[in-house]
Image: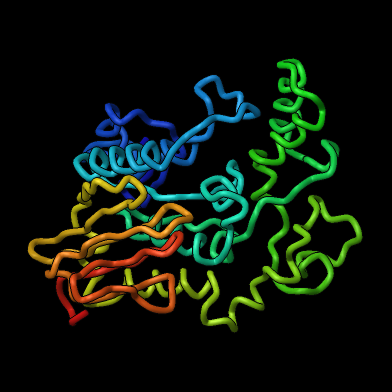
Length: 322
């Protein structure tokens, strides 16, 4: 198929295929079937192996780190990766990875930083760039997705009470990412003028919508815009696109660190993945702040960096002075 259809047209192809790491060469290697494949290892981190996602599967950021870093290292050795946090088959990423009480613009921007600077091609799903959130449905009849109805039934058979089953599917249903796009404050978030929208509009649309974020320089949308500009910046794009992915080990498990390196040029990504303040000592070679999801940087003369809840900061060892 590749030889007869894709190759003659120099086509870029991406596969939605759950490929084990040991078979990546077959799919994305020099003679692989596709240009890239999506990595499911961290987006399905909350799904048990049985596929019964109504069960509350426990995971930690140590698990998340292992899954992301392992796939990054294997993929860069074989070919090219397709990055994503959200799609039509996932709930909203902010609700999956961040505790409810800490869902805010800082945590949304931290996830964006983590995702956008990995090695590979980032795919941004509709509404992700706004930080759209899950919706809470009042009853099973509000859900369209057939898998959600099936999981609800299985939850009842498993022994969950109806209210527990509803809570479980509200948390993980893929209808969470299929609600109407939130354009502005008009009726149905201006997705439709109909009185009956195919899925309910998230009631937070008066505050969370595209129109409001376009004019707010501190919005999640504009932060994604800054990350895209950074990836295209003539000084840093070669490192951020073609540079090697290198995990950085630190004794503090609450900080996720990785580097992108091309020859002697290095970009360091620092992420506080918790709701508590953390500390990290920054090597003197890093003198340039490329982007930060807070308004300032708390770095003292000893090079101790104070990281506030869900703070992300990106540094470089070239291009300026910190």
